[in-house]
Amino acid sequence: MVIKTDLCSFSEWRIYPGHGRRFVAKDGRLFYYLNQKSRAFSARKIKSQEIQWTVAWRRLNKKIKTDEGAKKRRIRNLKVQRAIVGISLEEIRRRRKEDDKTRKAQAEQAAREIKDRKQKQIETQKKKPAAAQKVAQKAEVKAQQKAQKGAAKANKGKK
Image (tube, rainbow, N blue to C red):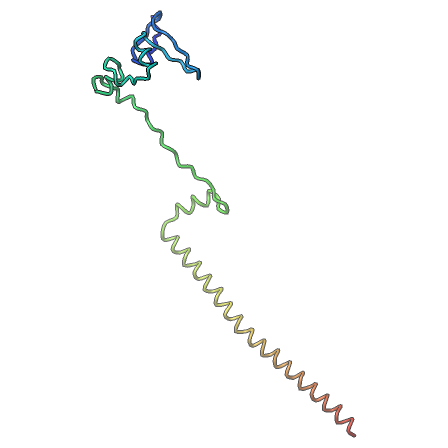
């Protein structure tokens, strides 16, 4: 047969059925006291660690062995990967698995592409001045033709 016992809120001794008192504080907390002595100490707000006959004092002064095996085990946080805006989770995992050789190869390829683009820009810029020269030549030819027409009209008016 199992007997239900409570622990005294002050002394931490066992309270068997039919003994002790239960005290309900204004905020609704329950306190169990073994006897009037522990109730009075608690009412005077005396720490149970300062009174030698309490379990708290015995534990503090190493008179009682405490169960070290009963320490709470910390649960380690698992790292959760989330996708970043613009990159999917699969892409992040794929990039992590890549080795240095493939990364270097990709970097070199990207550098080559950038160089090619710059080279094309330079070539198109070189072609543009040639086209601009042609436009300028056409403008000069038109100006000469206008000048000739104007001179021809002026000569007609003199005759």
